[in-house]
Image (cartoon, rainbow, N blue to C red):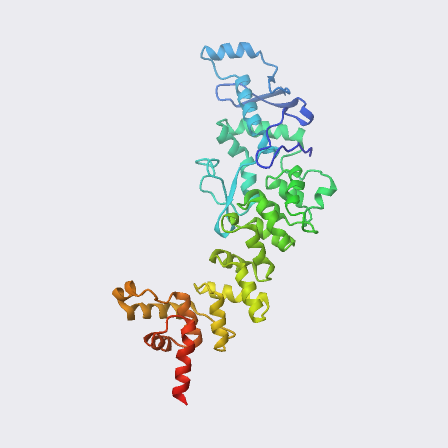
Length: 406
């Protein structure tokens, strides 16, 4: 089918004319002439480049008759349908796009402010293509523009014979096709509401990747909530197609940390899920390098340890790693449940009055590291009773027990 030019990423504007090349649209369709607007004999309808309409009827006479209480004329019906078609034209030709949102479980919805009561409000679609197709469906457009569904269906069917269909795969430059990893990707994006003319600009966001980018990357840039400039700045830290798609679908990641922070964590080679944990926990990537350099450990292993502790609700510092190393703890396995139980026990031991007055009350991370070093919460309780308040205090505590054993 002919491919109309796109104007921008979200709203590309409506073209000037109703047929390809800004030409008049000539149709042969039923006459909507009667009190109910039902179809009659077929006749020609011409929609001119300025969107005015010509039919075989005497338009002026029919308008006068209608003004004096006669039935709604074919001219009036047709003009209303043409107006609905004009307003829907951008959606049908992908010059405009209705916002869609994806929720948990991968279900899609028509965006707020664009869904229609009694049509799609609250409706969940199984995929982006189904949701986008609905926004172009005659039923949705008829409800949106308040015209009879039968009239609009008839008009769209006749117009599609000129346009070659609204969902058929468009013919594009092979260079555009090669920007997408999956075969037939241009057609998939077209059915998802993305114009082929947009694809090169979207691909440029991931230009650092030297392979074709997956469909999900393009969908994420269009329908996701990650800032495109942010994606372009983070991607060089791990320039591969799957990372590009993952970045495009993160939920407003630009609000959590800078592109540099995200990029540094990606460089550590840990899983993408662990990168999200680290960023959410606010762990500075510099701490990873500091601990790794000071101890001669691989940065990826240290990064994984930081994440492991973050999953247990703890934020380690360099001194925590040093304390564990001094005490021979090289493969800690922090348990959130065990740490929760220890914190609860310590709070109960101290009581509310003591907790408020005790300035050096150990925090959750200190207690968790002490638990890892000493092995069980009862030993931690004993160390606290003898004045230990952080992992560094355990050096003297452990030495005192070693002397007692001798």
